[in-house]
Length: 289
Image (cartoon, rainbow, N blue to C red):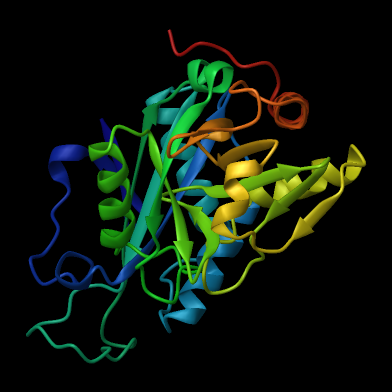
């Protein structure tokens, strides 16, 4: 398995991360996950834009240009030969010794980049049958728009839902739905799609951006406004979205069946349009075999 380590592509065993790397000690860094279809990095430009936006918000200087990073990531995909996959990359603020809470001088500390790609196939089973979610209080920090390495709040919310026998969590803050544990959340009622507006309480999803474009093209009304928890229980449809998830229906919230208990018409319409859009850009998917 090859890894992109800073500006070099090496075997995994060659990668050495210092114990005083701020990503290891503080979770001080950012990450992105890009879906690879037919060897193409889908919506790569949007992922890089979000990475740069996050870096600005946490006052971190990235040690590479967008063009150089994109080139190296594509090299990694080509070397591994994975046609259908998920590309994960992260950058930490770097090594600062001795350990110090204060942000280091960016002229003295250089960020550390790692990236890897693994095979990944479209989650067809979940798309066909849908998933279940449990309502969980959103107790995460107030900078959810930053794709931080620190994901303890997300992890605990997912674990709480799983322990209750559900597939995922739908997070609620001050009575309003924010998002799922690792995906944006959508509600359909009376033919209109609702989703939480971008801001500090949710991650500005790359797939969310594409879905909003598709909804406009399909002339499906969309309102970027939060819905209240109780509205989940009389929704016609619900679904989650993300780079790996794409669009997956939600058929049950707590003990309440959503709609008919099967993927809804608008959800399926958007999913079909999303897949068609991917294939228009990347071509028909090919197996990793």
